[in-house]
Length: 90
Image 1 (cartoon, rainbow, N blue to C red):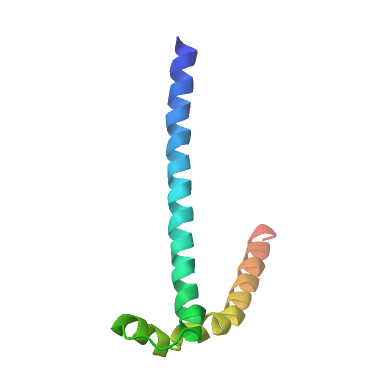
Image 2: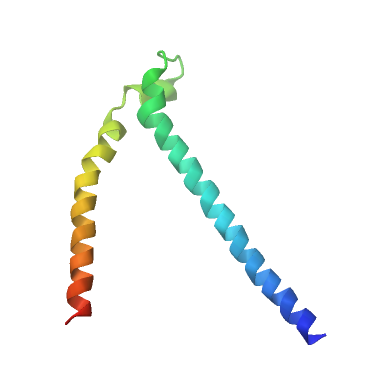
């Protein structure tokens, strides 16, 4: 009986982890697809009559955001690695 209770509790805990895992995967996929539409796909479509879509098509901020962020990301990752090495060997 106790083994069944533990397995049920383990199932509920792992089921919660599965839920949160799928939740974050779905939210991340939605965010990525939204960014992809705003940065690339909307620029390839013909002009729209919808005010929101037209504003996204005329905006160039997100098209330049990722390419200009990549060099800063490389520097930040390098300094993070360097600080961890210094902390580890101090």
